[in-house]
Length: 366
Image (cartoon, rainbow, N blue to C red; front, side):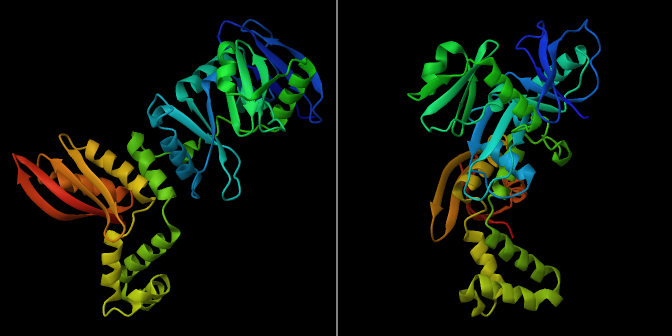
């Protein structure tokens, strides 16, 4: 009979780790504490509950896309709430949700994952699942209530679409007027832990390592977030334009796609060129916010470059003015924007007191 070991990792590494051994029916078969000098534990599926105060848990409205794009979009949305670059963070998504619903997201520093793994190695086990303590609790039925459970020195607070582990002296502040319902019955807490061990809400080890590419910091996060939010119609039209340029044999299919997506262009003598002109001024993937994020990243990568102006015009698209040291700088900015699925068209360039000032339009990638 397969069993599961649930371990509570303490906040400090010099403390023992309480554990439960649970059978497939959810019955607790054994309990105790693991210590470095104890008997070597039996090998079995292991779920480790980690201090929730070290994990940022949020529910976010994420765009449709691959898991990698979803994680990147989450990191970008949470960029003001984390204090480490993306390549030092593990970002994990909860189960998929129907369109229009917010998705569970957890972010933790990779160094903590490594520290918890090392701690478990010392007591003789390896975790298959890491879950923050606050996500072992179920959501309360009432919207204005928070369930509160003490885990070590912290208090796990669980509400509707809310989860955070905080210090006891800030519970009322974090609650923000919601009722705090303390769960003090050990049997109730143990039952919640057993349920979490059998069906974890999230696994902090499920970070999609195989999908990761070379580290790109916030630049990569912004690019993937923008791609995740790209308009499906825009991608279809852009793909049709590329097919037309790549192979004459697909020209008829391309023209049919253009006619379907933009009937007014079908009457143009050269619909492909008309589509290209429209794409140059069309809102880029992800809209103005994605364009701004990608442009900020591109400009920041060019030494001495500055973004002077960024505007969105319904007729002519997203425009910007950039001042930079040399004419060649625009090539680097264009390349960076192209990686984000956007084109940059220079509409004007002039010299100003030894610097180059370029007016550009940002459009959808072709």
